Amino acid sequence: MDTKLPAPPMTTQWLDKLDHVQQCYSRLAKLPLSIFGRGLSSSAYGISKLLYHAEFEGIPLDVVEQLSCLTTKLVDRGLAPESTALKLPGVPSALLPGSPKLGGFGILDVFLGNTTSPVAMQFGEYASSVALRGGSMTGPRPGSL
Image 1 (spheres, helix red, strand yellow):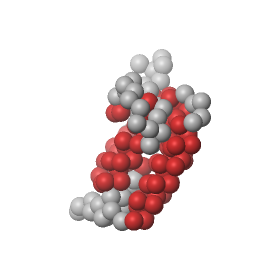
Image 2 (image 1 turned 90 degrees about the vertical axis):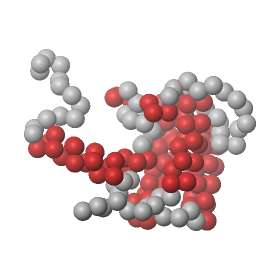
Image 3 (image 1 turned 90 degrees about the horizontal axis):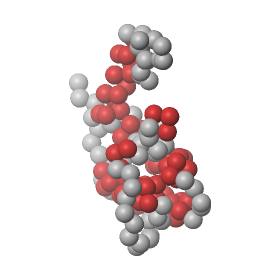
Image 4 (image 1 turned 135 degrees about the vertical axis):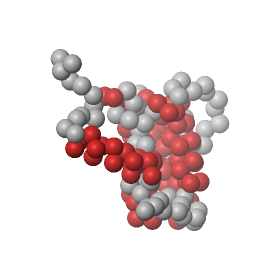
């Protein structure tokens, strides 16, 4: 059974939501935050707002791409969306998602946050299979080897 939902088309509602995220990111870029602060703030005030709507109606792939670019620009380079400054990236964008405890920078992964995505479903299946075997997703505890 294929449960993958088609991505909805880009609408003015999504453009308005993305514009709101850009405004939030502009305000966050003015604050003296570390990369971890920018990552956690972008997740709390930007990504999570869009994921809430994506859970009920899906999310257009164009929005995902734009959100990824905007978030990387803010978190990695500390630049507002409207900034034209050239600043070399410091961290590969693939390393930005995830908990700082596990080596990430606090950004919510758009695909893992959306429960209708195939990646999220596969991750959920993996997590439940690990739990059924009595394992831990965080790896072995010190001294347990």
